[in-house]
Length: 151
Image (cartoon, rainbow, N blue to C red; front, top):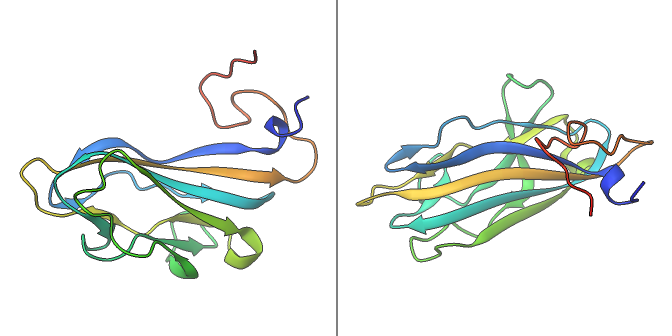
């Protein structure tokens, strides 16, 4: 077993999509049980407007909850410096989270929202959970993947 591969899981939080003037659809949460760290990644494509949390001008941030569909609260210090600008096309942004800092089982981005542009904002979000406890299976399904090729 590859030491690294056996201890990570990838979770799709927001599927790739284009949004203009509103909240992105399908904002999911990562179940962090059994993992000690997570890299929460926000990838953007072509932009002609900003992206933020709840509003297009607020910094993207993470929030947590004990249940997947409960009331989420902000995680202190788990926010980007500011909203993603309309000029920051084709970039990746991430928040590294120590799960001891989070404290609750489910973590997600707080309401990713696009501003009002001519076309809008292309983006997706996912989490790479790492330092899994115990021996984890090194299979596509166990790692949150559709397919895994080992070369």
